[in-house]
Amino acid sequence: MKITVVGAGYVGLVSGACFAEFGFEVICVDKDRLKIDNLNEGKIPIYEPGLDSLVNQGVKAKRLKFTTDLKSSIEGSDVVMIAVGTPTRRGDGHADLTYVYESAREIAQALDGYAVIVNKSTVPVGTSRKVAEIIQNTRPDFIEGTSFDVASNPEFLREGSAINDFIRPDRIVIGTNSEKAQKILQKLYRPLYLIETPIVFTTPQTAELIKYAANGFLAMKISFINQMADLCEKTNADVQVLAKGIGLDKRIGGKFLHAGPGYGGSCFPKDTLALSQIAASYNVKCSLIDDVIQYNDQRKLDMAEKIIQAMKSVTNKKVTILGLTFKPNTDDLREAPSIAIIPQILKNNIAVSIYDPLYYLGSERLQHALDYEPELKKTQFEKSAYDAVKDAGCVVILTEWNEFRALDVEKIHKLMNTKTTPLFMDFRNIYRPEDMTAFKYYGIGKTSIETL
Image (cartoon, rainbow, N blue to C red; front, side, top):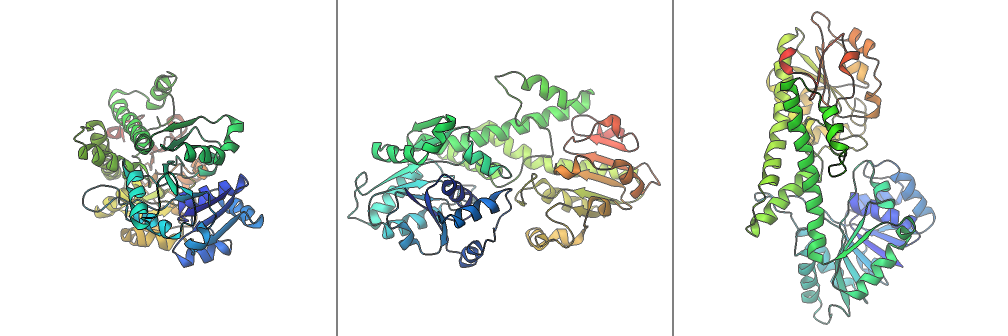
């Protein structure tokens, strides 16, 4: 079976590499010549643990190729996957489908025989139908069901663990009204039958909505535990014990019940906003999702205010931020809490030093961070956590990178400014309050900010 993946970004590259690992012939196509040249030289454009070795294995086995030539790639393909970006459209919050529709037209022009066109990108309800219409309008000689079929196959990849999510998924969702397409996609995912992965076959509309509903629910779960954390602080309760107590209920489950500074990344913010807009376009009220969006945006600003208020109790007005990315094991800064929090701190004439395992003084990635958020140019990036905390009045953990889990807190205390008791604000609840008595310690949902 031959697979063409249109788009060599995060979803396309991970999917292509994993399908090649399954033994299929895969060609990843992208218009970005520099990206393709780099991939052919073994340079991976994104940070994802294990992806570099998986890509290199596929290339070495001659099962994975990269090119800018869509027409030659599609020749003889059984499956053509659209895995291009669907960013939030400026002004209205809808998903921008420009790249999806452009890909559909170009695929139609290149098709030389029957293939299943698969929407792998996260797209609103009705996109599969629109893609089919575009193909038919581009190629009037094509008949849906005979010359081609369109299916929805949403991805559920988490940044930082995408390869495991693809190879050992919770489920596969396939939306198609074609029996022929269903059989081909069953064959495509046959390697997962061995581990008895549940496969949900449904209509394209339902499949398209499943992805948005899943991310909307998880975002709501995160916001719920964050609100409970606020309540715990006021009532002298412990949010981590609360989360365990409710998570042991099998109807609730313990995942995504970790209090923090708010969710970020490329999926939850974009998909909750798109889900809200989809509902509104059908005159359906999704007030829960609307409230989650508003609450999460405000929470990041509230976290900044907690830091600013706490800094009033220290003499040295310098804050050290540990962790810039929205989560560990990714270089993604999109909607990261740090990007909202740091500019607010700077507005209050508080100096900021930063260390992140991927964005640090001397890092090749550092310029990307500075370009992404120009306000970061007013901060001081350091080479290590210990360099960053020198003479600081406050340390804030924003990302739970593994190397932050076993910091030498005694060393940190000695390096910080100790004219007044230094602050340690643990926004990921990595440490236990009883182990942090040398500091004024704040843990989300554990310690009241007013006690600092």
